[in-house]
Structure formats: C-alpha cells, structure tokens
Image (cartoon, rainbow, N blue to C red):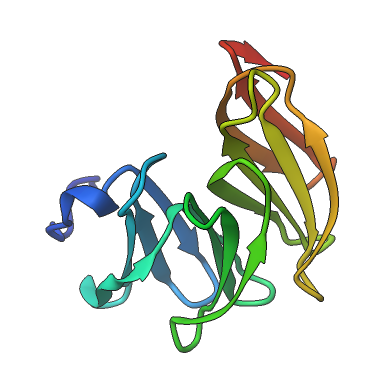
Length: 166
C-alpha cells in the first residue's frame, strides 16, 4: 500500500500544535500550545470526522489508552485537566503550581506527568496518580520548561528545560 494523505481535517488555530492517538479507540486528540485559550479537538480515526471541537480546553493533551482518559495542561487556574475519553467530558482539574502547559501519561503504571512554566527558572514537573487523580510529588525541572515525554518501558520522563534535555 502506498503512503499518502487519507483525509484533511480543518483545525482551529488554538487546537493545532500537539497531536496524540488512542490506538484502542482510534480517536485522535489535537490541542493547542503553551498559552491561554487553547482547545482540544477529538477526531474519530475510523471516519476522520470531528467528534468534539471548541468545547474542551487545554494544552498539549495526551491520552492513556489503558484507562481511556486524556489529560491536558491549563494555564489559569493552573491545573492538569482530566477527561473521560468515552464521553469527552471533564472529570476533574488537579490544582498545580506555576502555569500548567502539558500532561503526558505512562499507561503501564497509570502515572501522569504534568509540566508547567512560571517557575522562576526552575519550572515544576508534577507526578500524578492516574487512578486517584491526586498529586503525588512536585519536582523542579532546573530550567524553563519546554516539552516533556515519558518512556513507558523504563518509566523515565524526558524533558527540555532551558534548551537542555534531562
């Protein structure tokens, strides 16, 4: 089979920075970047049609395919937003310090790692229990936060802070 574009789905400007996929449900999540007013668009990967657009808020959304939840950062009030992937409804917001911009998941241990800016040169990283949606620990990144990702095979998180990968 030759590669190529199978569909084009128009996105609003505040929902076109990040993308993640739930391979279990074949839903695609696009979201905005590290600023206020960002939204999440949910796309059905079977039909390439929009299921939800403009009503879900958050930046750099990522999905946990095991629990069918997705998570995003919210600048103000600073929180990690938890959504139900079956209904696309907001379950809760977990209050965190700084200006939350991103959340990534480790499905194998049901952990969520949030990232924020506004930390005075040592931007915070949050470790969250995905089963209870509780903040377990906050650690400093040692710089100005960039992107964050997790390796579920090793449970290590990697982040860019002040131009350095840690």
